[in-house]
Image (cartoon, rainbow, N blue to C red; front, side, top):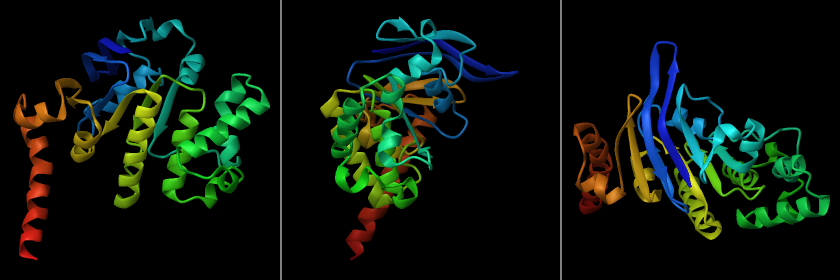
Length: 253
């Protein structure tokens, strides 16, 4: 569904992404994992051309993304990110309706889609459709952000650390909700995170980046048991240490 071919991005003399080759199968959730400055967000933003590559190309369902006008491409690819970006002067319903309205959907079709998506993200339409973003909790705002990204029925979704700013309980609930929604809708998704535990629990496969390069791609189990180098070995050691520390505390109780 998504293919990156020799994808490269330079900012002046700095190579932020260095000849990435990667395929994402239809219905797969691929995690882009790495520390700050690893190039993971830059890579993802080249998929919907929020950033234009210096070299290489991105294909979505066999079509070079450069053949589509950037606004049209972004309407076809759902995009959710950490800061949510809900329009404060619009209600929940109006926020979700932005892209379908731009695509010329009828008012009744838009209204039906808004209610359908609110149900999907477990926000009762009668209670939430007329609320303002300021009246929502952080977790509720993030649910609306996901609903808005799904509004035009995209087959591909990009998520840039969407749950990173949330408290642990809310984050856990939204991770579960997103997993359910993705499988229900058979979405193909790229999910950017620097959280190793989140990557291991959510991803079908994980692509680890370091200093702009793709270091290893594999299932969570493969990365845990067959790390390609010391960098990945250290990344995978973090959740192991955390688990061991929790188990030690339980044993003391």
